[in-house]
Amino acid sequence: MLATPACAGRFVHLDPSAAPNYATVEVGPGFEARSVDVVAGGEIQAASLPTLDGRECEARNIDDQPDVRLVLRSTQSLHIAVEGDGQDTTLALHGPGGFLCDDDSAGGDDPAIDLNAAPAGRYEIWVGSYLPGHYPHVRLVISPAGR
Image 1 (cartoon, rainbow, N blue to C red):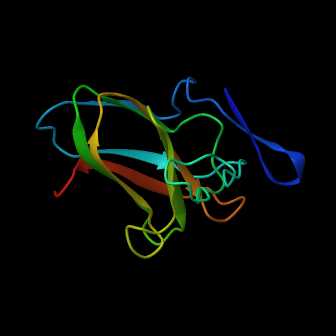
Image 2 (image 1 turned 60 degrees about the vertical axis):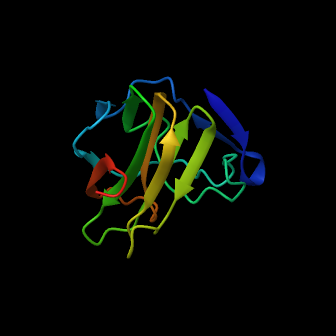
């Protein structure tokens, strides 16, 4: 379990080792895009997570357990995005090097994270809702970069 300082003396408790809420997706060379339907949202504000790019984590209202576990069988370049159908969602990803987060890079209210030459290994993905107490049904899409 990861505990990091948060606002007002509270801690963010995320458990990347916990079973994912929805699916484990394994990909190898030449994989086709995969999608997983999830319910976004949770009670955790992840702004204090230490991110790889040094920016404040933009993931809001996520669960303590990952929604999806991604297992890369080889080095891959990936595009991970949420198709929210007008819902305002966020995205957090924990991989071998640490956390990456996003809130609107896919356009509109949809988040996306691009990984270039991501090493083989295990990655955990959380899909959050920008609005507290909002739990929209959305689709997480994992595809090869550039497709």
